[in-house]
Structures are given as structure tokens and as C-alpha cells.
Amino acid sequence: MIRFASLGSGSRGNALLVQSGRTRLLIDCGFGPRALAQRLARLGVVPEQIDAVLLTHEHSDHVAGVAALAKRFSCPVYASAGTRRALARRQIAVPCLEDIEGTADFVIQDLQIRPYAVPHDAEQPTQFVVSAEGLSLGVLTDAGHVTASMRDALQGCAGLMLEFNHDAAMLAHGPYPASLKARIGGGLGHLENRVAAELLCALRGDDLQVVLAAHLSETNNDPAHVSASLARALADTPTAWQIATQQVGSDWMELRPK
Ligand SMILES: [Zn+2]
Ligand SMILES: [Zn+2]
Image (cartoon, rainbow, N blue to C red; front, side, top):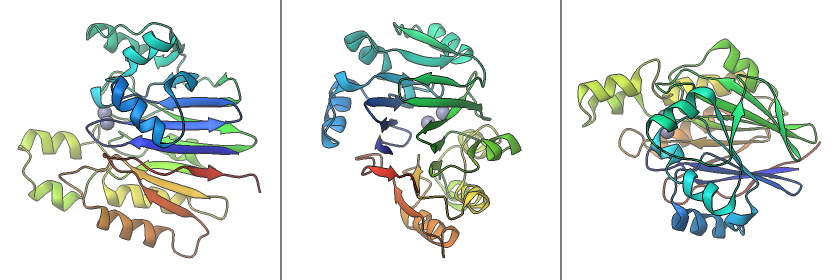
């Protein structure tokens, strides 16, 4: 069994807890020590139980708490060469940094990790498929568009965490300055609802057990729109879904062998 839960998702902080067997990983750590401990406690976990952190990229909503966590509990932090360079440039000193070598698979205790590249305005953004017991969880946030290799990486996953960042019309008519609208809506920005739903339609099937919609913009999206997209994309399938919030995150979601 793999289970996973968001500790909070959006432009003010992200972290995803993934567990299989006795192994607990965080994907990203955008919360400082106190907030992280509180958010983990809701799920019955304490920070010392985190075995490793995987970083997707260097934006502060993904790394703000990682140095403190790694220092306090000496937990290894895996990052691409580009992410490590970007952290060094920003003088974020993370002890126990481990190298992710491109898209080569690696193992952390009970979990196999397959990194894959995504288009985003960071130095070497990397997302992950995490597998155990023949089950895979595909994670995708912070991507400006969907490439064929991303679709391939996520094919066959039993669980998905997918970015539904913004509604294109809400972004266009919203309060952000033109330059920021262009960045978010551009090819190196964030996935809009329609594109995420199209990807989900390409990936859906009887083997897809659960979907977690994530990284919703609090300004340029409406959870009701995302719910409607998910309901449409997953109609007539057995797939359960949730929407991760910035304030709370999500409940545990489970992937079970068939
Ligand atoms: Zn982000
Ligand atoms: Zn980002």
C-alpha cells in the first residue's frame, strides 16, 4: 500500500507526505518548522519520522522549510544539480544534500523514485513518480505545459497529484499585472484547469484509483470549477478525488494492490 496526503498546496507553501511500509518521504518542504510540525500532527506524523525530502525545484513555496528540517533531523534532501545550484546562489544551506542524476531511478528504503523533467521557470525542475509494491503515485505541479515525455511518465499510475493552477479566464480578467499573467499562463508557468483536465482524460482508466488536484491559485481559480472539471474528466470511472487546499492540504489517500 502507498498512502499520501498534502500538508498544504498553493503559492504560499507546498509539501506532500508519501508513505509506504516504514518509509515516509516529503516531496517539497515549503513550511517552516512550526507549521510543518502542526500540519504533520494532523496526519499523526512527527517531523523526526521523515526519512527523506525530494525537492521539485527551488521556488520558495517548495523549499522555505527544507534547510531547517534537514539541519534539525539530519534527513537527506534529494535535488537536481540545477536545484542545488539555485539553492546555493540564494544562500540556502541545506546539509545532507543528495544528487538526483537527471532522470535516473533511485531507491529510498521501501520506495522507488523516478524523476522526470518538466517545463517551468526554475533551473532544473523535476517531478516524480514514486512506486512501491507495484503501485505508482505520479506527482505533477509547477509545469507550464504538458509534454509527451511527461504523459509517458505518468501513464499507468494508480494515484496522481495534478496541478490545477488557474482558470484561464479568471487569470486574464484578474488583478495580476500583465507581466505576472504572462509568466503564470506561459509555457514555463503553471497548468491551467483545462490543460490539467485534458491530461487527466488521457491518463484515466480502471487502474487509476485516486486523484488529488493541487497548487490551486487562491486568486485565479475557484475550487468549484476544479470540482466540475474533475467530475467531468472522471465520470464513469472508479477514481476518487480530492482538492488540496493551501490552509489544510488533504486527507490521506490510499493506493491498494488489486
Ligand atoms: Zn509552486
Ligand atoms: Zn514553481
